[in-house]
Image 1 (spheres, rainbow, N blue to C red):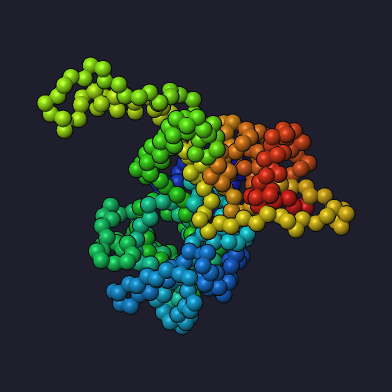
Image 2 (image 1 turned 120 degrees about the vertical axis):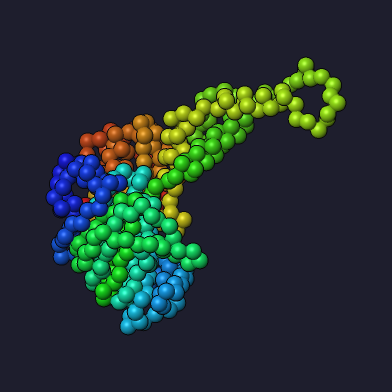
Length: 395
């Protein structure tokens, strides 16, 4: 995606301008970001999706100041004529190609930050109350009308004892009614409240924002896995060779330990040895590459891949398969020469063609770089095809 090419969905701003001026800084409202917009899913299709075991959904209902939240799947939903209820269906992008294609229009933000596409269906008065998110979000009106109030207040205290995180003192600064095709961007911790004015659907494109605790825990776990791998002279946690570095297989020795009158006291030497051994672990960029690459490409827990067992025989259809296409559920990232796909370190370097496949999520077989695939890359593509991570299509 060209960061300097104006986008209608950003109101004519280029992605570079948007990221510099608005991203994580201030809200942006774009009227008719998607002219004549049609939702990727109908109301009935969304309701049907919420009945599936492999779909994450929630039903939120409000009666006066009483809130109730239930988790799906749902065999029955309230009637459309019943006010004040909202159905939230998470990660629609892994279940529907059109929803995935819509989310991919926001890939001017790195994939490492892009999380999922959620759709909410609400009846008159429906909403989830005034709240804030800890991540960036684009709110696209898909059907009906919703009134949004929002501001960037500093007081983010919540009401106690509720199943939802409702702000105790909401002070909106702006108010707009969104129609189908309108888009509202909100940065993290922007207080907002959306209320349905009629039966409406709103699409949320959300972005993951790991906190320092998650990053630190991940680095520690990755380091621990590498220690185990090196000690056993085996592969790393994702099948890769252990990271280079000091071996930590030396046994603790204390030839100068004196006889003690306090046998229950932990010896100084053992404490110093523990500190010295952990200091040998290299918390460096190489470790971060592997941890983040594998963690950020972990497929959604509801993702199920199907291989292309039904590819037509070339004799039945002479039109050649010309394109490699990533499955909508596949997550693929790279850093330098390392390639990561669906939670694994790829057994092949990130060649130019594979980087294009990751960036564009498809690659034409007629592209010159595709004709320069190494034998290892072709073998990897064949394995991913068998696993259903990628597909061959005619185009």
